[in-house]
Image (cartoon, rainbow, N blue to C red; front, top):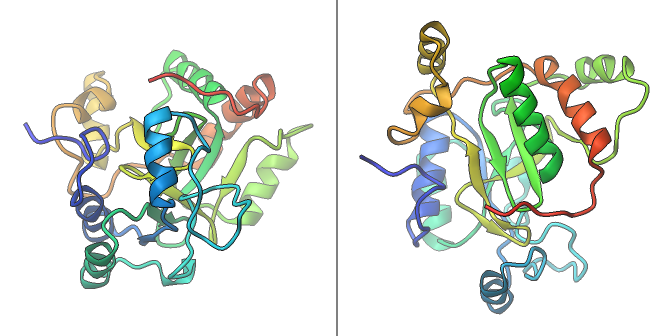
Length: 250
């Protein structure tokens, strides 16, 4: 059985292989992120404390160390195998950044405890969701690309939307597994499942996530839910669990 990217122990080729898979198999535009300072990254791994690492970017107070583009800039995100391979051949430990919206999926992120509550609610409702990326402090749900006007219309229906719920559309970005950022290790909380696998799981009544655990990530583009199918649950979960930096143990 092949191992799932983001679940296995990371080595120098893991990030490059993952980046090439996302870019060439799924058509997701990626680019290397600002690396962590090597000494502080080692300290962070040993202490297992989020934000113990220091970003290599010029900002001494970087709020998202290791989890943002720096050089190249976000607009350089690519699906070209030669470009992606060259980036990670030269910077094998660089975090893996997805440019959201447009050609890639959009995303919604919320505090880890709120995210865990939201996933439990989706399971209770029998609502199928797509890939979920997790760090010790935040969960990020990948969804089909949405327009800002569409998002604004949906948010207007809510009396209040917590600031801890964040939106990553066109011009945004998120870190993907198997990166290691200042917030900790990036992993799949719910693995991506190919569209045909997800449909087969729905018809057979079996969990798509359960099927995904049988092998590697799908070669074809993963199924993604639409933003409006998940927004209400995420708003409610974020309202009951503010962004306090609380971590989940996994």
